Image (cartoon, one colour):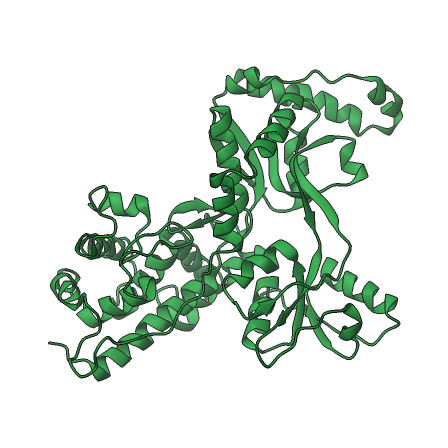
Length: 465
């Protein structure tokens, strides 16, 4: 704590000099005393600043996740330090927090600019970012290959940099692009991408990393057409953290092709996250899957219809006992490693179907107790399913938001489910009533509905006994 306090005090002085125009010449001649790695290690932790978002940091089923989070964790482990994440609400706030000593390093694609070079050291891997056109592509739809083909087309974009870029591009082409500014605050860039994938709108624009991540959910998307110039970006730290910057440079150079680093890249930007369609093993024999006896055995422990448990299992794993999800969930019931251990799955038996079902039922019972404030059993079922997918923290956030905005916090459909959708919107996930940050709520919204719809199909076609 003493070292951290000295860091803050010393850098406040440096910051005052850096931001004072009358001392500009003095600043250029002043050597800021650096904080060594040994001094940093006295604190035992690396404090990383980032933003809450799908490509940086989020909580999923109670686990910290995100591409920048995983790289930060690998870097901290390399230094022999514990990792502590501190979130900011915007890029300017990231920089402000760094400069006043609230963090050691920014782990985010921070744009490389001349202005920021005066007070920051860019470090780590240099990323190249740009904006791309998000469009559909399949056997009947040919994607646009040139920006000139946008003339006469309808492009839906959020205000700010995307709208500004399209206006500039339109001027460069001499006009003709039909630009639609989407001012609705409840609609995010990812919502627009989803609308393109579903055919509701023809085109939108997004940063290339966000667009690429969304192709793992929607394989019918094409994001190859650049609509802006390249912008270099990387991590950054302060001028007094020279050794940390050098360590980040060296670590990225030596590890960018390592299996662990490549696995993180694949998890977020390559591994498919698309959900397949439901199946029934044998309608004639009245079988949903090869694991029906397990569902019948353990569903009784939570007073569920076994066909509902089967519907949950199908949504999770497609009845594939050997599957590992992009997030690391394993087995028939897709339990995260920490959850599996907590609810009794022996080490090495994560893919055993009975151990998976048995632990999942225990977990469901535990979640059900945590949601006792939802008194109606049928309503609570929807909340339990949502929590199975998202983790309790995000469900609590959605409940708090529903309560704040005058909706029924004890009803899922058309009430709390609307706010799990809004958890991907910065205005809502940064609300003071939310404790768990960004979340891609559309998956949970659809998850509950798909399980219940499939359950109804199972009830119609498969006998209860």
